[in-house]
Length: 571
Image (cartoon, rainbow, N blue to C red; front, side):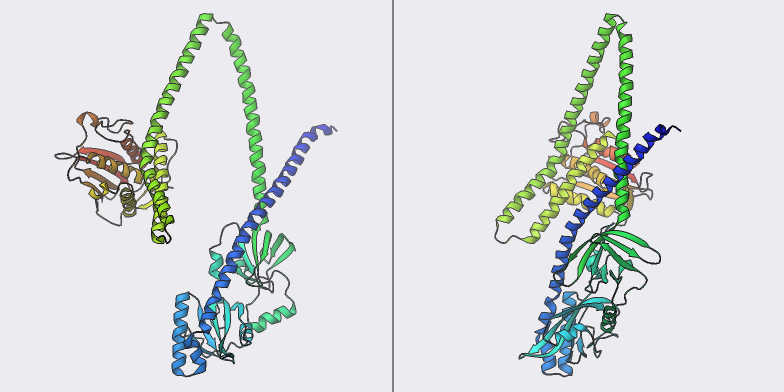
């Protein structure tokens, strides 16, 4: 048997396996570094939030109404304490706040008006009460004995003349803290000192042990009435970076990164399924394989082209010298014409881009200058700072919008369409006009027949089309003593019509036939290269609509942009 024929496939398989292993190791290292960076930042954030939650109980412990409930107990003092706790709960956005006497009985609570009130309930079995009555601050995570909702309890002793009179407790629900951290494919876990998951971005993992619970830990959980750990599913830590979740319906393996918290004896964990590492590794290998295949095809094509060129060269040598010379001259001339045409188009497009983004760039420079002046002040106005940042962000989006519309001139791609609220679209256009041309914007009037109109389209392109029509109208009214530019919106049911009218000088009759051609411009205009209407017409075509012009009576112009409410290009 000839074994040599099996050698090349065997070498390829071994090479791919080795490459896949290297890709897996690389992806695991990359993910590990990324996860460590995220974990460090989130651990500091969680520590900071837990420390902030401990401020309210300290304040309440010294509140006159709270202390008076124990110094001079009675119906009136308990009522005042209820009101104070209710106000503190609302102001701090906490879940509940309540106070207990030295026996653990609740004497006042923020939910005193609710049907299920804490008042009268005894929570002396809770560890936080036992610690607080010994004149120490205590924290505790558990499922509420009355509400059944999990929360983070912070207890402080209420003292008067050096004597502990009672305990004040504030409960905060921490589930929402991790909800904002959701970032697929990652999962966040917070594990308490007993090794049980108490917080998670996935409810599937809540109250799952990360280690086998001892009899002492199980008894402690039951006596404290913390929660009910899951019995059929649990995490198993195989190594510092390898974790598996085992249950009846699943057996998943995770890459895990862990960090201890400072504010609590908890551990914050960031996990990701290991199969994703293999998937990314396979993608890397396939990408490399595709590059190699493309390079091989390119090389083969190069060799074929080279052989073809050599054959053509041999045939060309047989032709007469005069034919060869004239062919070479024709090719050179053709290449020169193409280069000249390309450079001419490049110059015009560069000029168009320069013109179209000058206005938003000027607005952006003005915002930056205002920011520098504000930062020089000892106490800058924060509201003004925020507004400048918002305006600058809108201006950068405006620049991006301009570049997008100019690129659409080439017809290289289709824009993304979605459902748009026409009123919001008009508001964005008007806001941009007022920001970029504050002086002439005073002449703008808006008329919207129905505030609930909507259509499918691209908001970036439609805003640019309307802005081009409005800016042309403003330019046309520069020499009018009482300029007026009006944008109105109406509907026929199947389409939405945007009409831009002005009382300016109008369009010369000789230009009306070529009004929408590129680089056609009225010489009376002070700015522009004649691309605004061309781009607007392209945007209309992109939306299966049309742009039309009618002269005004006795002067002025009327441009109408009709956009169907539904187009086939919606995504």
